[in-house]
Image 1 (tube, rainbow, N blue to C red):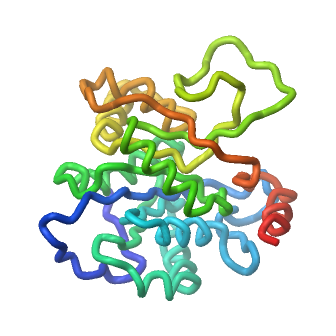
Image 2 (image 1 turned 30 degrees about the horizontal axis):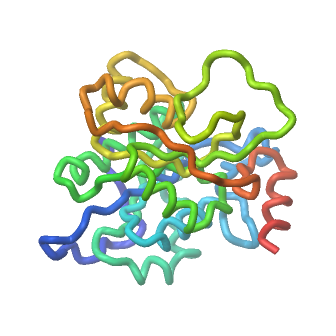
Amino acid sequence: MPSPQYVAPPAPTATPAAAPPLAAAVVLGAGSGSRVGAEVNKVLLPLRGVPLLAWSVRTALATPGVGPVVVVCRAGERAEVAHLLGEHLAEDLEDRAPGHEVLLVDGGSTRQASEQAALDVLAPRIADGAVDVVAIHDGARPLADVELWQRAVAVAREHGGAVPAHDLPGLLPRAGGALPIAGTDRLVGVQTPQAFRAAPLVASYAAARAEGFDGTDTAATYARYAEAAGHEAAGTIRAVPSGPRNLKVTFADDLALAAELLD
């Protein structure tokens, strides 16, 4: 299991015996800046003077019932990410409740490998019931708000999985390859945070690792393996209404658009 790094010393861990389980947040930041035209990892680019990654971590910390937050870093960038998060989220980190620490872990060469690294860190808390839902989010989606995080977690807890989706008008669906996402029969754009019941998620990723499967996103792996892994609690993946404002910064124009949308 990878050794995580804490952005700040953990808050006291003593919690009431009857404390309800938390939802863990995973924020992925192990990509690059090639398509956005930057010489650095795009999640470190500033949006209104704050790194893209910090916007997502701040929102996760502000979401009731969400903690811990695991930030997946590109290899060699842990120290820089820790410094930036500590600098821009100082007040947010001071107000943490027990169990709401921020941890950093190195990612892998693929999205699947990075998600697996985060799940390895969370596995002990999932095994003992402290975490019952995991929400995985792209660090390059800085405008996902607390309400969307809350809806995704609540739907995952009730049904098994939750994927934010919004209509894509004017496009024709391509036959085959559709994910079994209940609650929509239209062509939709799939976003993050994607949330899932934690134990079936860990089991599905273990099965995927054994087969060498690399999913396009978390939902693809969960849909393929969660039920087959023997988890009756896998449930179904439900669509959670979202919109185009929850954009992903991929190109330089996206960063400018995100700044405009903040107005």
